[in-house]
Length: 82
Image (cartoon, rainbow, N blue to C red):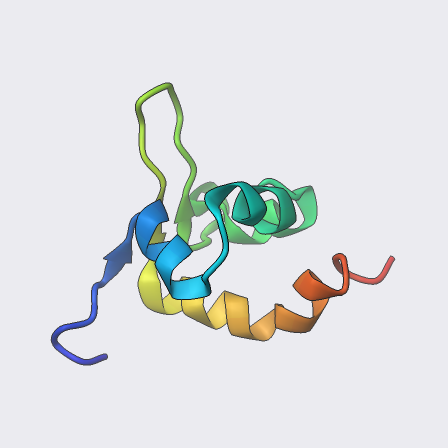
């Protein structure tokens, strides 16, 4: 990781990194049960899901980037094969 790269991303960073809106990211990735079980910090994943109103999303940058690359095709084809 380059020194100028962030260790953690906010939702704004994720939006900038992917070029997708927060609504799209939530609908297509973050709130889909099949991805949430992989991504949730509670399960060892790279995403801190807000626990209350005013709480903020937080992502471990390199691990979230890795997830996005690994699941790119699945995400754009509508999710994992059933």
